[in-house]
Length: 338
Image 1 (cartoon, rainbow, N blue to C red):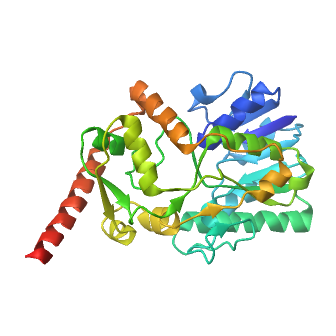
Image 2 (cartoon, rainbow, N blue to C red):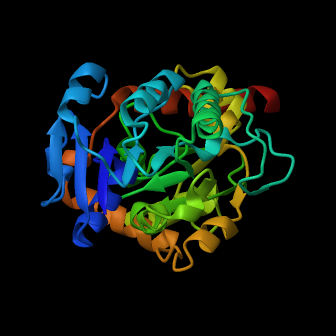
Image 3 (cartoon, helix red, strand yellow):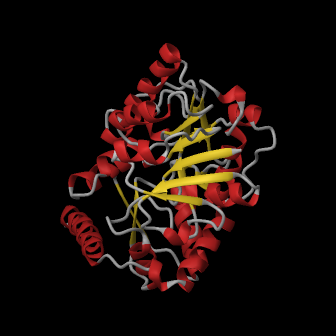
C-alpha cells in the first residue's frame, strides 16, 4: 500500500505511522519537520507547509496514492484545498473528524454513527461538521472516495488525558496531586467518559485503509470501556502513589471564571456522558478490539512522563487559578453557613 499522511506526528497519527511502517507500507508524510523525533524510520518525509498549495502540487506532481489522510484539517477551506490536490490521485481520502461533533446534549447517551451532528457549544465541533458536509457533497457529486473517521478522547504516553487543565498541558494537575494539593474535577465526577489508547485506535484505522466497504462511510473509533471522571482521577493518583484530594466544581462555573474554552471543552464535550457503540467499525474491521484497559494505559503514561522531564511542563498560571477557584468555593460555603 502507498499512503500519504498530511501531518502524521500527532497523538493519533504517530501510532498509525509506526504500525504502517512495521507492516511494510510505503508511507509519505507531509509536515513542517518540527516533530522529526516522531517520524518512524522508513517513512518518507516531504518537508513542506500544506498551506502552500502551489508548492505541494509541484512536489506531488505525477504521484498517486492508495490512501491520503488529513490529520490536521479543521475548517472546510482546508478540505477544499485537499480536494483540488487529490481528486483523481487517490483511491481513498480519509478525514479525521471528531466525536465532539455529535449531538450535544445527547438525546440518547449511546452514540452510533447515526447520532445527529450538532454542537452549539463548540466552534471546533461545528467546523468539523461543516468539513464533513463538504466532503459528503464531493463524494455524492464528484465521486471523491472519502472515509470520515471520528475519534473521541485518544491519548498516548506523552500527555495525561484529563478534563480540567490549562493551556500548557496536563502535567500541572499531576504535580498538584504529588504535592497533595486539591485538584478540580468538573461536575460531580460521575458522568461516563471513554478514552482510547492511540495504539488501539491505530489498529482500527489501518483496517479502514484500502477498505472498499469504508468508502462513503463515517466511522467512529473508540474503546468499549466507559469510566467515570472520578475513576479516571483515582487511577492517575494511584499511579502517582498518592491519595486523591478532589474538589468537584460545576462545569458552568468553571466556564464562567476561566479564559480557557471550557464552554466548548467541557459543556460541549467532556461534561456529557458518552458511551460509544463500535459495531460499525468492528463490522468493517472484524479483527479490531481495543485491548489497552484504561488503568493500564494511564499507568504507562504516568511512568513514561515521570521518567521524561521534558514532558513535565509546568503551568503556574493554571495552578494559581485552581487555588482561586477552590478558595472561592470554600469562602462561599463558609458565608452561607454563618
